[in-house]
Image (cartoon, rainbow, N blue to C red; front, side, top):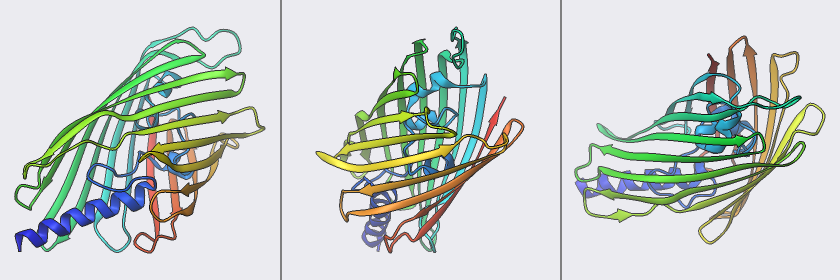
Amino acid sequence: MMLAALTLAASIVVGTGRAEAGYSRGGAFTTPGYGARAWGMGGAATLTVEDEGAVFWNPAMMGRFQARNLVGASYVNLVAGATARQSQLAYGRTLEAGTPGEGRKPFARHAVGALYTNVHFDIQGDVGYDEHTFRLAYAFTPDPFISFGIAGDLLISRSDVPDFDALGSSVDFALRAELLDGLSLGLVARNAFSQYRFNYGDQIVREREFVLAVATDALPVVTAEGDIVWAHHDVARLTLGAETDYLFDRLALRAGLGLVRIGESRSVPYAGFGFRAGAVTLHYNANFDQETALSDTHRFSVSVRL
């Protein structure tokens, strides 16, 4: 019975990681990134997200923080018809503002961020599985044209199945560079160094991922981004995403299209919007995945500028 429960737990964790992350083959600690804003663009958020979501997607983008403090929360049920919740809390802070120069956006010379992610699965009866990820991130922006970022994760899993608990760590590196006016390049190395160990003895390294992104805000009203994700020794995912400015300073619209090339090749459309009221912004996103195990998912998040 214990072995059956352990196998079921492993299959749920692996299966959910494979399907929802899109470009992952699965495994523990492979659940999706933060926030409905980023996923409204299909995850093409390496150079677009300048709020607390940058703590996950590209720590170098914390240099583009537009407020002293940013706080956010996000929620999604990952698998329709099952209890597979992902809940996240994020925080970003500008430590020292830079001097932007005439006509340029303000930037944070030094910025820090933190992100907590909990993923909870109800497996069977009273058997549950939880993953906890604690992330700290730092960005240095010597001038408005370039930023460097680093982030470290503490990974903890807890389960009602004996010996299925795990502990580990991981490190990411990130870069943002403005090549031309309105054209930026981003590079993120996820899980550059990582390791976690289960109590039953297995020691595992997280799969390295490299994200190359190009974005432009030179188009009227719209910011667009394209991402290439390299993982498992191949191009694993291609994504195009876009969002509008906040129309009437209230409503932003978003859309994305992801081409998944690992496992079962498929395209996944995404859509979402953000509604701003003063310092508070509410975000919503829907993923229209044809993967039968997933169906559609709906994500909600809130961001507050302080």
